[in-house]
Image (cartoon, rainbow, N blue to C red; front, side, top):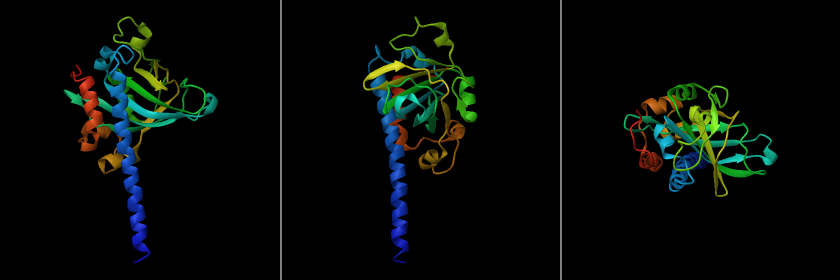
Length: 222
């Protein structure tokens, strides 16, 4: 019994640490959205945000040196549901050409999924940007009305923020897939992003993240 009890305590502490990491990342994602949208002249155009079907936020995405692969990040997706936003689902982003600064860097990434077609494909399985859906670097500023047709017709628009610089980036070749382990931490069971978006009830730990989305784009998606 003396040997079993320390083992149980160790496993419990590991589980608690994992849960804490997921919840901390949710709060970081909320901070990313709030900070970016707090400067409308240098952030995501409001009219694009209000038209988006879903938003994906990946705080602190990492990249290996010299731009040779190795990109990896964990974040969350939430989609419009009725007059609000759905419970967030955990996602992984891997690979692709990101155009970050040379060297190892932590970069916040935000993506807007602009139509139902891209949303459905993204939630159905592993999704490769530029293959299953067209992707473009998102415009920066208060309004997107003066931007090119190519950007306006893209299914997914993406931005990055690193070392204080916020700019559109084309995430061509990057893959997006559900993070079922982190979803289990959030919802208590193995659950896919599609199931989270469509049926899950948001736990209280997601309030800050969903609050940031509601504050900056409260409009019902038509």
